[in-house]
Image (tube, rainbow, N blue to C red; front, side, top):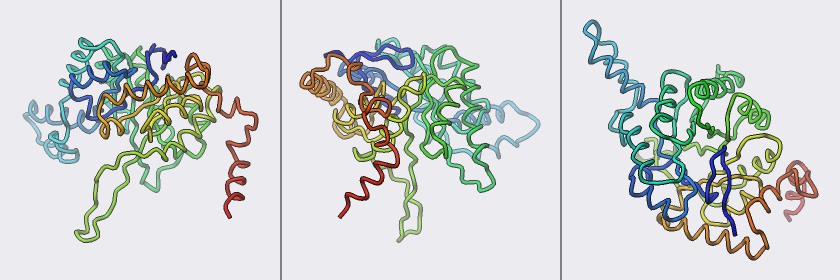
Length: 329
């Protein structure tokens, strides 16, 4: 049973990709990911705040006329909050490429189209096979229009595509008012792939200490439904790659996402829970299911459950909504 797939022009031996997470901070872990069947690895993110604070600190050191940058650095998280510096991140790409053959995808996380985007070309020069841009932006300003939010995304994509020749994936949120049209506009802006969807880490409250809690909860398998819906709706309508993320706990979620039309499926939570060798088990279980169903390759069933290919396309839209509600007694 062949697991080969193509993701934004990159040939992979498995559709299962390790998504951006702290596990990739260790080169030995990346080697283990390859040994256990990962199709590719998206490295942990390089953050805009990190880049801007390092630049502000550097300018403060060389400046002899003002200390304004010292004050400016107070607006950013402490550099100690980040695992490595910018130079170390680029060196990490180089070392990873020396140790493994699978594609290494750099990750940029930011919300503006300022100087941090220049690091995309540095990632390319360091040997990255692609870049995933994670635009983690919550538009909390009530004066910010929806069109302004959309243009922020499109401007970032265009700026990065002007900087690099390697493929660029965009990890986006599901909260656009016209998700399908926004996906099309991102494609037209130059995106080679869309990663559906980003998980916003909503805060919780400690009611005794009256503090905001920032604890992380791993995704659960029932969270696949929203990205499953949109991958199934977008498949065959856009000429770019679709990557699924969120809720991938086992081979079951991998299979469902590919049935909807995903080229690749990204996971991290299950590796924290089950360790990196679990990748091998997931690949084996996908192959076992393919054998049982009579599928020789991923292409034989990819997108077969998408809106484009099912017998009743309305099941993706209002008709299914009515059936679900009518079925509740």
